[in-house]
Structure formats: structure tokens, C-alpha cells
Image (cartoon, rainbow, N blue to C red; front, side, top):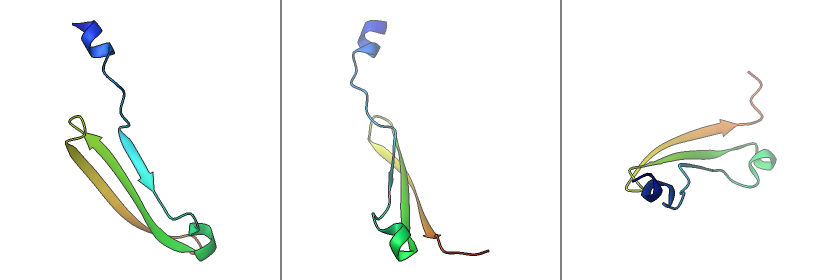
Length: 55
């Protein structure tokens, strides 16, 4: 039984996406996702990031 579990391909459990020019534009969206149940379900959070924010 343990051999069957160890032979399963490893899939990423999370991913983060953001624009490549985030620090040039100064503002942008960041999307963080977590995959559950062998890729059948996804939980996601979307954040607005202002990198030039002073306070």
C-alpha cells in the first residue's frame, strides 16, 4: 500500500501569480491559489498591492 502512495506524481499544492512589472507600475494584483483534492478544488485569494504605499 505504501508503494502505491509513493509512486504518485507530485503536483504543486499552491501557486502565486503577479504582473512582471509590478514594481515599475507600483500597483497590481496578486493571486494566490491552493489546490486541494488532487486538483479538483481550488481555494484562491486575490490581493491588491500598492508597493509605493507610504503608510
